[in-house]
Amino acid sequence: MSGRINKPDTPADIELRKCLAAKNSFVIVAGAGSGKTTSLIKALKYIDDTEGKTLRQQGKKIACITYTTVAEKEILDDVGHDPFFRVSTIHSFLWELLRPFQKDIKIWVKAKIKSKLEEFEIDRQNFSNRTRQTTRENNARDTARYMYIDANIDNVPSFTYETGSNYLEGILGHSDIISMGPSLITASPLLQIILASRFPYFFIDESQDTIGEFVDAMKQVEHNVEDFCLGFFGDPMQKIYHTGSGAITLEKGWQEIQKPENFRCSTSVLRTINNIRAAGDNLQQNGGRVELIEGNPLPVEGSAQIFIMQADDRRAAKLAKVREYLSIQLADPLWVSDEKIADVKVLVIEHRIAATRLGFPALYSIFKDGTTDSLSMSFSEGSNWALLPFQRYILPLVSAFRDRKDFLVVELLKKYCPIMQKSYLSAPENEPLVILREIKTHLGELNNLLSDTSNATVVDVLNYLNEYGLISLDERISTRIGDAPEIEADDEDVTITDRVIAAYLNCPVKEVWGYSIYINEESPFSTQHGIKGDEFMRVVVILDDEEGRRSSSYSYEKLLGIKDLSDRDNSNLDAGQETTLDRTRRLLYVCCSRSLKDLAVILFAADIQAATEAVLATGIFHPQDVKNETTIDIVLAN
Image (cartoon, rainbow, N blue to C red; front, side, top):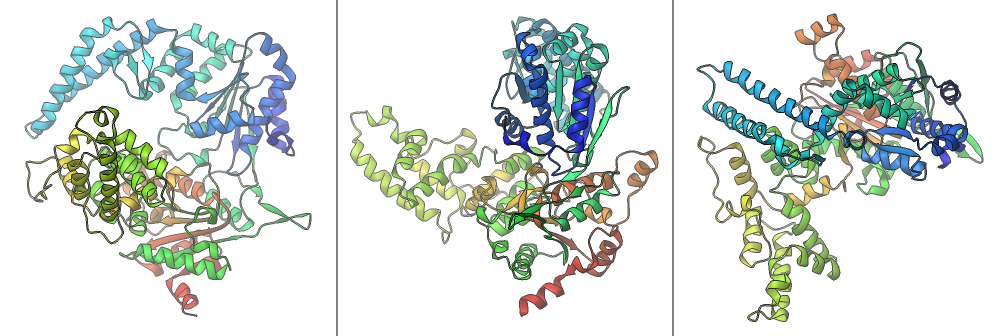
């Protein structure tokens, strides 16, 4: 076990042990920085100490379901990778449980296929004279595909689990597992008994982000099977994904255990996140970060400020200005550093500010503005097929060449370069030494094409590599390169994808460097949804509804009272349903609670005076910590 178990017990740890001793199911509500994982590890240790020998002899294990593979690794490291603890993500756990039930799996797959066909039929019935021809064609194509699958699915002998689904190949994807698992558990008393027998203790970490269907299925197991202890570890205020269950409703005989301590945040940051949380639930956190000064634990005061800036086209420059101000005000030069050691994290709702700061604004606009969700998402995730040649091969190759890492250069060429393959080099007409000399010359030219001062475009680089046999291109790219003419804006005979890729090919290739730095997390920028569970010494949170306009689920202006609620918001409020305010408050809480010491929130607003008055009225920040551009300019001028 890790050093977590040696940390002092909190009241929640003591209450949790009582629940485990009585085998009572429970829900732990643990605020940010409260040591939730520590309590979970202590619970696992307690079970091992009190029942471990008996349970091991019976072949039983303790299940711990996590939300991400990162969390899975963290807990596994803490328990020393002891197989007695079945720590896994929900997908892998469900597949391990369900894999032997191939007959039930096939029944579920067949039912899903029929359900999809029924959906297509309903869509066809709702077609009108205004329905586009492409919509009709897509419906006909999808219907034909699923009818073919339906006619041949009985020939599939068994199913396995991979990333994406292909039913006729016997492959189930992520979405299938997460949908099928709860369904089969709920429908099968036998499966419930098997699950509870194998795992008499079942813990679900980050329960607020676990899908409701799985939570309900596990509740049913707990209700139907004796000697089964179900435990949830989470925080409803940190639910920032739409599919999460949020708060776990207590069942009869269950106990809720609150864990209000905060060991992460400085005093100023803790005060701020408590103010954010106050309108969300009744959990107010206490404690705060301490550091040893001459052997004495003293609280870290830190800072928490909000800067209200004019929303214009100079956002990146203003962000830099705020960071410069903080470096002066706090006497902390690391605020202006982008090096990883500085531990500065800038959290943006969307990637546009990062794109501008890191030098890929045109590339960002090409894939994000007026495109499809698929293109937009693949760009944000770094998985777009058109960009992969640069991510996997071209940029690493040039970087290795510049750094004189000859071994890495050779390894990359062996993996991706056609004229470095054994089959090519061994041909009688080819001289390996001559080819190597030519490649060295090509690398020098490629380095020039990708320099900061180069005016080369993406297609210039791809054409060069392709011409000299230095790359094997995806057919989707090779058929589009050459002259790569620009597509006219009013040309209606091209798809959105064609338009995007054409613009990308004509984009300055040096912008791909900035994009690579961002995707590989070599810059201080991250999206606000991508940092839950992390912590940083210095945090900047960007509040900018205009930048986040692609998502209507969040509005900082509404949360802060700058903008009126919509009719839908008011309707949801009256009905007691989740609103934009709820979602945005949770996201702001998660972002601000990442800070260990200093927090800077930057609000971009159209009317600075109105925004200042609204922010002051919320009481989230102390009045002296609400600042604007004038304050910053005065300090920087001196």
